Image 1 (spheres, rainbow, N blue to C red):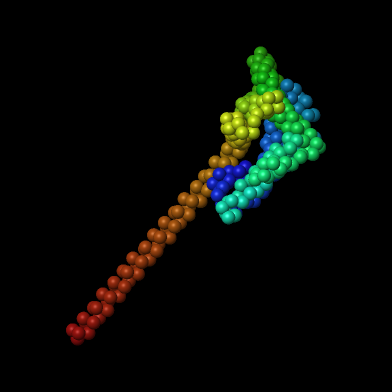
Image 2 (image 1 turned 30 degrees about the vertical axis):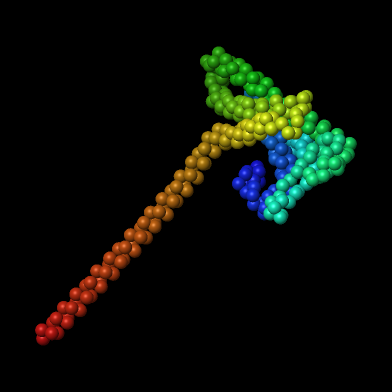
Length: 318
């Protein structure tokens, strides 16, 4: 997201604008890839938490190290195949204005059968190959289903099941509180409850922030919209803003929910603050020592001058 953010401030700088516009389609594709990875990972974490809460004694059978690595690799590969059409979704041309001092990019969707070949010559047209159009259409449908709809609705359903399972577990603990074995499991149950509530909060934030994007994806698939409809594109931009806000909040919730992470952050902060205080105090001590040295030097010069004057006066008296 850094290049897209810098484009808001450096859009008139041709040294930034040229490479940015040249690689904008690839950067957007990578951005969509990372977004798809985060969506599937949140779904996987929510599913894993539900399996642990539902069957605590079998939790180790679900995710060992090799399975996690294999599953993560499959997520990377699967999401890349889902968004690969973003790399060739548009045909773009750079146009220079103002004697080459400004540039602009004209992009045309490659999902249509024909599109203008040049922004200056509207009569010329470019025919898109059938394979490319099929890949773009299939990629759009699969991306909307497996990256937007399936994670959002699955996370919402898993949240409901998690809350239901938490209530059942709490009821079992309350009814069996006299049993010594159950009392020994109460701290573990509290820890699992805390982790599960964190996952519920994160997944709820994910579902709410990705909901508008899912609605517009469904709209695009079933109804479609005109390329010059400014109201729709404004609403889509707001929905994308919700998605980015949700992903940022997910990161903060993941990090701040860990007591170890909070302690480490506070430790680093106070360590830096202490270093600044030590540096400032050392500077103050250095300045104070310099001032004392100056005062001592002045006193010595004054004493020497008084002694020389006394010696001169004694010589004159003799």
